[in-house]
Image (cartoon, rainbow, N blue to C red; front, side):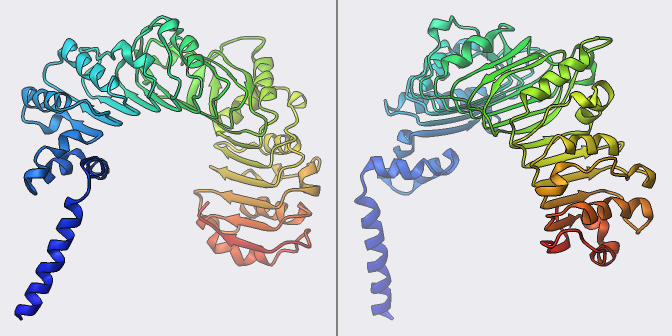
Length: 443
């Protein structure tokens, strides 16, 4: 028993010695993968670890977890005053009883000047009562790689001041912009920016979203404006990003959305309507918008965007989407003619996902013409509806149309609503000799 105890003690001592032999810089790097709360707890391990957490190149703070504002400020200051090491990552959830502008800006300025690479600030104060501003040093931080700001003021420094040569990812949500044209001069100064997300909100004072970037690959724009400000619409959008690979515009309605340039073969997710009343050029505006998207490879399009196209455009003027291989479309009030016309504009479509709020009437589902993709390219079709399908003619005619008319169809994927009729559909004669299965899916 004694021998066993000695063996255990020897192994434990060896492990402790191995950890003790590591340099402080490596130990701090290891601690940076822990939360700051867990990192502080290591100070109880031994005398050597007492102050080690103060030199970790990462800091996560949530002011609401401190007893009061004084304790929060004291902890923050102790960390900043403990050394001159870089702070590679800084995350702050900010919700204090009394916001002192000078103290806040000084602390964030210190973080910025300590070589911060990844900066996240989530302000939970009421922006109507307290304006939480960033230090001007933020806009010329040469080490910054990712920036996430929520509910703070985005000031308008002189263009010459802005220089973020390493910034690749930026997320701005419910940010109050000091200048309606601010983004137009700011984004081009981020020379390697690849991912940009903007979430607009009431009172952001953003008049125009100008996205002009030669490096941008992903752009997401979402509106969180309340119904009270809905009549005003969202800011005008202008996009000039020749390398853009992905664009998502959701819950958005604006008087203008101009696409000057996006990357060929991009993927787009569109949930957008033009906020225009009695404008004779409305239809032409929509056609021009779609024409600028005509080179995309994949498209997700919402029911309200489709309804806008249906109600305001001459269908024969719709552009050809020759590069499009995948289309995901949603319908609230199904318009079979619109769907058929849109499919006629996608001659090389390979995959089609459709969401229906209700099925079209059986007499509506007729092929007034056979889209080119039915003849040569459409291989995968997915149908989804919240309605339980019992096998009526109106429910069965749509899936039967694809089975009987798509010459190279391989799979028809259906959601759980079709479970009762899956066997019936499998028994229908298929046009395609390559056809493999009718199957249930989680689509």
